[in-house]
Length: 234
Image 1 (tube, helix red, strand yellow):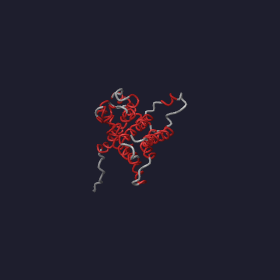
Image 2 (cartoon, one colour; image 1 turned 90 degrees about the horizontal axis):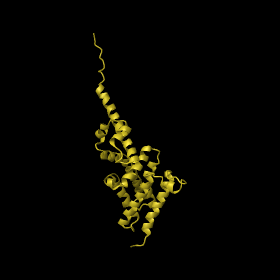
Image 3 (cartoon, rainbow, N blue to C red; image 1 turned 45 degrees about the vertical axis):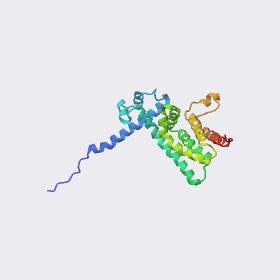
Image 4 (tube, rainbow, N blue to C red; image 1 turned 90 degrees about the vertical axis):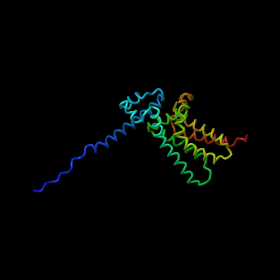
């Protein structure tokens, strides 16, 4: 009498591993989302790990398991979206280089590429990106976090500075770096979403309409670079 072969029982442990990994990654992303929002709302020092654990609905120890110290968590919060932002800025720059070859690039295109990318993300309707743009406005404005700003943003910024220098050879390197610094400051002032325009205009104008704000900002910055270039030699 021949025996009927039966399929081997499923290895339960093996099927559970992918699910555990997925759950772990979902928890990690939830912690990043919550930390991003709380750091942007209250600041790094006013936000505790317990606050983050409470709002992320996870155990306190899980944050240490995934990220280590609170400073390392901030680093990862910045890294997650800076990677996306840097790729988009570089892609814009590479497209300009491909289109224009060795010719200097237009100021409008360079300013738009650097500023427009983050403004578009902040205006995308994604709450995470809105929180992120508010957060980096705080981080970049503080000397305490200058190492993090350098780590996550300076490499791409230097490529834009190099292209601006090619487009404005008459401007000294020192003045160009100053002008770039002013551009970043103006950009971050918009990202901070402080409602300052509303208070200055007695509510007549809306600073949260990012598209028209971006158009005005880019025109202002382009004019600023051009004005620096047209100054008499000192």
